Image 1 (spheres, helix red, strand yellow):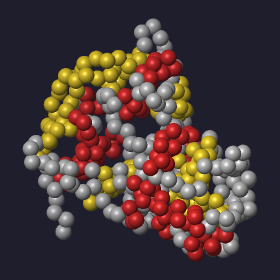
Image 2 (cartoon, helix red, strand yellow; image 1 turned 135 degrees about the vertical axis):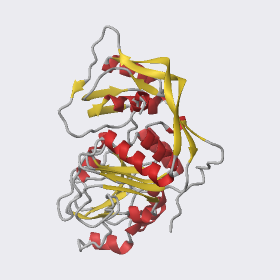
Image 3 (spheres, helix red, strand yellow; image 1 turned 90 degrees about the horizontal axis):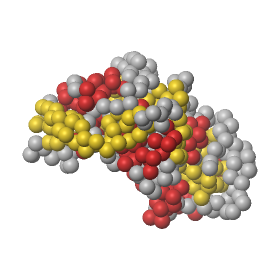
Image 4 (tube, one colour; image 1 turned 30 degrees about the horizontal axis):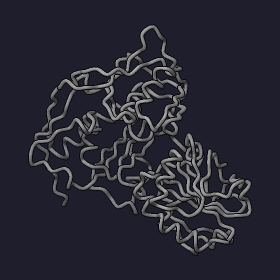
Length: 395
């Protein structure tokens, strides 16, 4: 496999850690919110301040199709219970300006919590969006599941501090077989409905070092992950019509699963399933090269953490990130291909601040804050040409 192929390992949306499940019957974790939109001025928004009110906490995101599908349902419930001791709180870890623009097109009743840095998501053990957590007036978690299961009788039971019958499978990793979990498994199937998986199309989940899963993803994303080539550098022969293909669910489970090991197994899975004939064609391409700044020592701190954490775009505090993480971040932000020529290995902690309104500002931030630089250059990089692939017959 060409070294160029490995220059920019594709990173999933979430750098996954092992997080605890919300404990039913236990005290709800505190809310670590940087802002709360649509709350009255001066209103305290901690769970302690809300004691005496039940709280419906909805973990959501603007990019989450399944979340958008539940907005009207949740709004109807919020309006029905308005004036009762019940608070609806929708929590996202996204930029407040982005959320405010989204709300103009998709109004959400109730309060909107901004979880800068994702600490509330981590403390509640959320691994999939949307996920709804029900907290009673005494601050005790009474249920967790999908908003589609939420109903007026369930909320009446919550207000009465009675047992809540709630679907707890949504928002969690869907087990692909009975306990115990498989030691080794490769799975690829047509995408199951969101109502069954609990994940929006395009979501990625799993457990670092053990399992990687993707839900409702297109063929192009699977190929990009498997071959290590970004989707915009994948070409196909005439007659291969990917756009009309359905999405897929995929899973790779193995002991001590590394990023490279996952890629190798996924490549074997898609090549076997679709009988792919593909070739790599190196082409000179305009890129940004990430390299050490001349005369400077980088300011990345070697990390002792075993799990990776990021934060809100434009204002991130990172732990245990490989250089590939900075490469992927710079590529997503600038919209350009980024090649790593730093020669740095290992994982690092760092902070990075830039202006999200100006994608090019990340170059200056990387230079001034990390002691690295992004330089516009030309490099030969691999493009993937798909000559043929066969959609298998589902019996």
